[in-house]
Length: 321
Ligand code: ADP
Ligand code: TRP
Image 1 (cartoon, protein in one colour):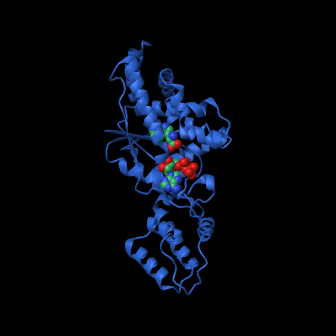
Image 2 (tube, rainbow, N blue to C red):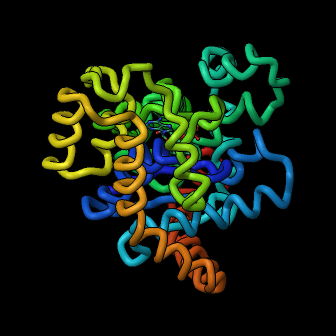
Image 3 (tube, helix red, strand yellow):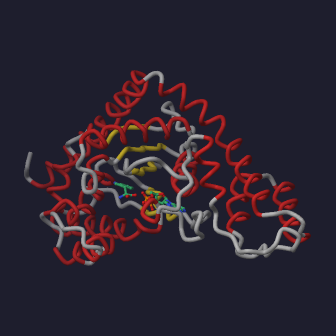
């Protein structure tokens, strides 16, 4: 079973990205033949600053490895290391009806927000389909927001079947991550860099503590019992703390006598300890950029080997070869 997913390099990771995307991908590397890549071509639809793009790619590679991606188990590469993906994207484009892309929410939402539509943004799902189909992926773990792009991918397999015959491409199944549906931000909305409510994964100690201290709460007095239901502090604490610690915090909420500052401090301590081993690994990796490059190069070599085989099959079927 080939498991494939891509992550856009779009800046510093927050804990929503970790629990929603990175951690599940790392758990899956033991379940099959994992292909994980840094979707730098896709990131160009929003980042056209060359320095930012290359720094973000490097940061995401380090983050992924620091969090436990094992290059011995997973094939880890940069999307742009295999530019052949564009050949497949073109072949998919010629069978892709305009309407299929016009219906895509992510495109429509961006246009509605006033982001000027360019061809890259419009064709984004076709490139994503090529990412998936080029490696014969069977299972594609993604967040809910990417579900429609997987439907486009499956529709495109159907179109290729109609035009060029069955069996040329592998039909992928989405695996929508639902376990940690939404990590809340410090204001209680979904944590997202676009809302400015994030807690970074690898932030500086003092600054991150300050961020956690800003978590929005009600104004219950220190001595009074505090509502557990809907508490943002408890929801976040559950991500980091062990069962007895969580039970203790719930009991202290209900008993009264503790201020929110105290609970936020406990949350900060649990957060800091949780990421400590990854932070240490990250610092080590940062000192050795050559190692990152060679991991990505080895991954690209393996990925290319597979891509070339698939592309040969498609070139033959379409009359290009
Ligand atoms: P942002 O909303 O900050 O721009 P992205 O859209 O770049 O984040 O997120 C990349 C992936 O991280 C998403 O596909 C999703 O799976 C996951 N993710 C982001 N924010 C959260 C969150 N608050 N809770 C759970 N998962 C999240
Ligand atoms: N569009 C995905 C996202 O923003 C990233 C991505 C690009 C991807 N190509 C992919 C995910 C292929 C899964 C499979 O999250």
